[in-house]
Image 1 (cartoon, one colour):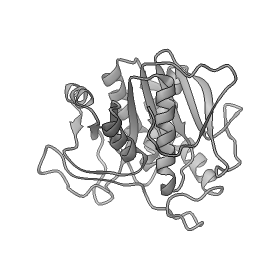
Image 2 (tube, one colour; image 1 turned 90 degrees about the vertical axis):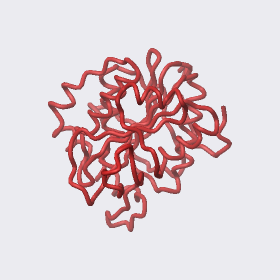
Image 3 (cartoon, one colour; image 1 turned 180 degrees about the vertical axis):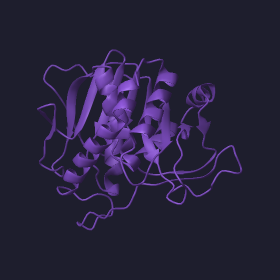
Length: 267
C-alpha cells in the first residue's frame, strides 16, 4: 500500500526481516514529548529489537547515546507481532508529510494490521489536569475499539502535523489508524501524560506494558528527554524556529468533544 507521497529512506539492518504483523505504534517529538517518551518505554518494556533507521541528507549528523550505545535519532524496532517507529528529534513542519509517508512505508513492509499513534496535545489557556485522553480512529473498527476502551472521541476539529496526515491517509487508503492524544504540559516533557497513553495502548491491544517504572521514574525520564531535546535544538531548527531556541508548537484544534461544556480552544 503506497501513499503516493515522497518518503525518507527506511534503512534496515543487514538480514533484518521487516515483516512482523500485528500492531504498529509510532511516536514523535511533539507536544510534551508524549510520543517519544511513550514509545521509548514500550521499546524497553517489550524488549524490542532495533531493525533499522530512517535517514536523509537533511538530517543532522548526530548520534544519541543510550546506555553507552550510539543511535541515529529516527529508528524502527520490532518484536513478536508489534513494531515501534520513534523520532527523538523535532523537525520542521514542512517535513511532516515525508515523515508520515515513511511511517506508511514501514507499516506496509511490516505487514501490520493496525497503526496506533501516540501524541500530545496542549491547551495553554487551560490548567493541565491529569487523566485527559482523547482518541480518533480512521476506521469504524478503530472507533469501536476506542468506545469499548472508554476513550473519549473527538467529534469535530482539526488534528495537525504527522498525526493528522496519517489519520487522513488511513481514511483514504483503508488503513486502520488510531490516534491517542494525551493532554500534556506545554512547558516540559510530560511522562505522566505518556503513561496515560501507554495504558490506553495496553487496553486497545492487549499488550502487557507495565507502567510502574515509568511512573516511579517520571521526573528522571522528563529531565533526560528535556536534555536530549535541548541538545538537538542546537543542531537542527524546529518548527518555526529562529535559531535562538524559539519554536512554534505543533497544534491540535478539536473545538468540541461529546461534552458541550468542554473548553473549545485546544491549541
